[in-house]
Amino acid sequence: MQTCRFDTLGCKVNQYDTQVMRQALGSLGVKEAQPGEVPDLIVLNTCTVTETSDSKSRYLIRRLARENPQARIVVTGCYVEADRAAVASLPQVSACLGVKEEGQLASLVERWREEDGTTGSACTDMAHDLKMSPHSIQEFSGRTRAYLKVMDGCNYRCSFCKVRIVRGNARSRPFKELTAEAEALVGSGHREIVLVGIQLGYYGRDLVPARDLADLVDALEEVPGLDRIRLSSIEPKDITERLIQRLARRSRLCAHVHMPWQSGSDRVLTRMRRSYRRQDLEHITRSLRSQVPDIGIATDIMVGFPGEGEDEFLETLGLVEELSPSRVHIFPYSDRRGTDAASFSDKVEPAEKKRLVERLKEAAARGERAFHHSLLGQSVRVLMEGACGGEGWQEGFTDNYVRVRVSSGIPLENRLAQVAVTHAAEGHIFGNLLSFD
Ligand code: SF4
Image (cartoon, rainbow, N blue to C red):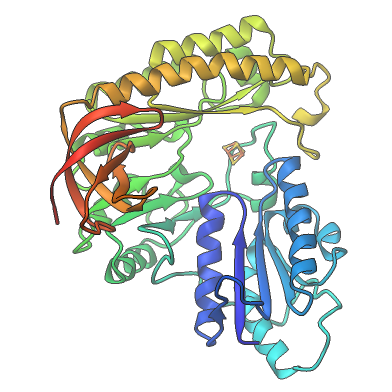
């Protein structure tokens, strides 16, 4: 078994977990298959956040099996946790490894190498006798920004969510392990680290002595050569006053938060079993804006939750207009089998959901435009990621997470560039390159 291909569906945590497996196989000398090359092994790391994620996983497994009839397929991740039997019954699946078993992949590959000549057609369900590889990474292939998973699981109980069911309760990784991993990532050339976790804001509460995200940021700031630390999605209730103060002190911590509001209606938030109410969102957002003036605040909104009528929708629309986030990801609600919300009776019709999504998109676009226009004429610092389109166009992100495009004959990937913002377009802004390091 010499070559492998990795495919990942879903969130940043899954991308991190794939990188862990990539590295574990790399240490056995398994090379990543080049485009067009038929691999010996395919690892598909799945997601189960919606019913569509499940069907996408099934479709991909069938397609990968068809296109690579000689390859063994290992399926990992959340969909395995949610429905192991369904995954195991798909063609060519040689092993199913749930979230907590992914560390067994390298040991499984070693066993297959020893057994070379077996067909691998019978699916290895649970591999209890296999060794676990260390759950850490030294680099993040193919990405300028490296993800660092600081915790897994979630202690909230949102009524629409399957993720917390499959990933279990929140648990933090040891403090020292994370600082060491950050040092290794910087040693591999990463200048920005994104802290990821299913309930990121929980970080440290279960450690002895207890820590929090602000402590972790303080420790990471001591890592020589690390230019930026970014928080990924964080629950509103986990944005504490202490964390806001930490953001206000900035230094290398990016002025950016992504906090999923889901709704602006208390009635809907209650049925969603979210841990906050509209007033909390207003308070946290205002507090962030007053203490971190240039902060980019992105959010997720779920539209068409069971029981959501025109009044509830207008409350959400009003909240988006009032607080004007820099970016809004809008999702129509869809039933997820096994969740409480799936059994709620008062479902919103698909056509109505579509109409509500379109209405909300207009308000969201106005907020994004306003944020982009506020940067016109400013000089911003951009971590460049690479080419975008032809003729020297390259792009990267500001610390408040605006996509910036510049034209230059100099390759700028992984450079921190100073850019004078000249104009705004849909989804990004343009500027002139002033300097870079
Ligand atoms: S906060 Fe809610 S939606 Fe997010 S993972 Fe936890 S239970 Fe799921």
